[in-house]
Image 1 (cartoon, helix red, strand yellow):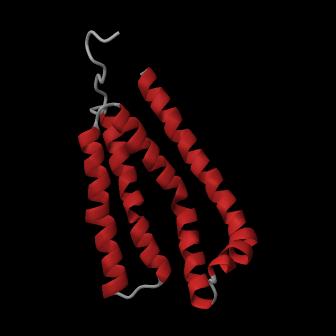
Image 2 (cartoon, rainbow, N blue to C red):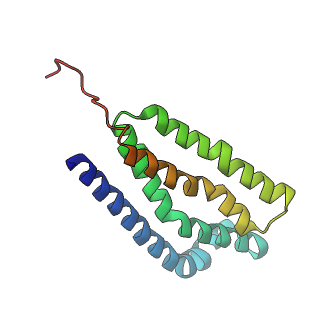
Length: 149
């Protein structure tokens, strides 16, 4: 029970931090990034529009990314569930994000925002898989060595 409560608190805190960072980036994008930072890289016209669109999609997806990193890389791996964590990580990229991105960009020639969402789809697929694994409690393993002091 104590472990589950501590994990829930850690995941809630990471989600809230992701929201705060998203809000901060949403403020910085029009006030700092576009007028001051992007010109340093000579971004103008279409390249500026694409960079700003990619940032907006990243800002929107930041809370799920923060949750995923904490849940999979933090909680599940720390509990000794490395194999399933790796399957979720790799599977989300190769079975979800990559096909969606390729289809949206090369087959459907979708707008940049949708292609970026395809790239970020791995995060959306990790949320339910990570929560399912967390709730199963199968990730909890004794990761200490016997006899170690």
